[in-house]
Amino acid sequence: MFQSVIIGPDRELCARLQAALEATGDVEVIRTIDHYPTAIDLVRALRAHAAELLFLNFESIEKAQETVRLLDAEASHVQVIAFARRMDLAVVRESMRIGLREFLVDPFERSTVREALDHLQQQLDRRPASYGTTDQIFSFLPSKAGVGTSTIALNVSAALARTPDMRVLLSDFDLTSGMIRFMLKLSNTNSVTEVIENAGRMDEQLWPQLVSSVDGLDVLHAGRINPNYPIEPGQIRGMVAFMRRHYKALCFDLSGNLEPYSLELMQESKRIILVCTPELPSLHLAREKMQFLRTVGLEGRISVVLNRVHKKTPFNKSEVEKLLEAPVVNVFPNDYAAVHLALAEGTALPATSALGIAFSAFGQSLIKEKIPQPEGHKSKFLHFFTIPPRPLAADRN
Image (tube, rainbow, N blue to C red; front, side, top):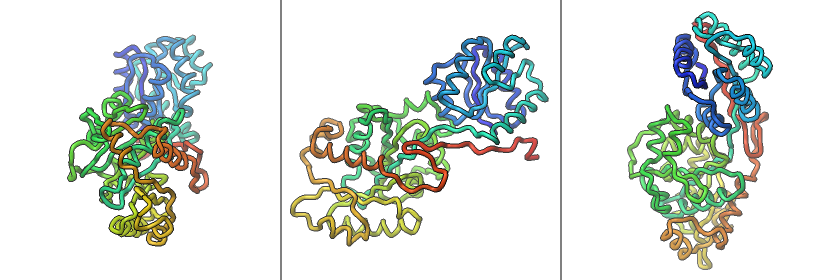
């Protein structure tokens, strides 16, 4: 079924068009916008739903033309269909001049709509609708509770958010003991559970109500303890697809309990940051988790980070690498005083502090790392989420 958006100030006309489109069984109208949106609002609306078709009212030729120009610059391959109350040859000529090939006129007869959809299907088969989406996705996984994973996830995310033009989302998926809300003193009562519950109707208007913004970093906290909350893999995939289209980096703070939804998030990730401390219980569980993640095909994405290292640490970096049979990509020193001060203030560590600089350097190493991808994978920062072509109802019957 085509995902579609209707734009037009004539509400009655838009409603009749929506009814005619949905009567075909091939079109889902996911949003009707009763005005000509700005560039930002237009792109957000289309990305929010991965729209393939845009039905554009030519009541105002100038504004409709401007909308098409915005699409050419920001969301190429979205198929645009003009519509109006009546056939006006001057309007039709203007629509064709800017590259539109389909024009629907009230009363939107079924045969005419069907013919237009057949043509649009052919266009999408040749050039599927695509949206720039990020592949900079990082899951932070503790070897055991209390090793400082949330501190690392928060501060790496905050450091990435300070990078110019880098919009970052930190999501706390530890439904048993999520700490991000406490660490940042967040007052927003919405959490990841609200995101899951509203996944089917998520859009650019609802999303800002669910996230909190802290010094340029968007944060989605875990809410109250809710270990039995059901999250299906399909919900995770849909949610992450939405997030990919809106952010340049996604950071997931996981519980370490290896829930099915956590494994799904790790499958979506470019890197899995396995955090451990240089104590035997932590290293034992880190090794156990490494072995398990190998069995589900995630070994190549794991990076081990050693946290809270001090001069009298029981194990040094090389010894940890031997125990885990994996390289340690970063070592963070122990600095309880700085971390506790940041907790008291409800902020990330200062960017100029020793740990702040270390987190920033680690974050930059993550986004600059190039992991081998299958042939055809695009991007340094972005790859493209492509909507596969689908048969029309008439073809399926």
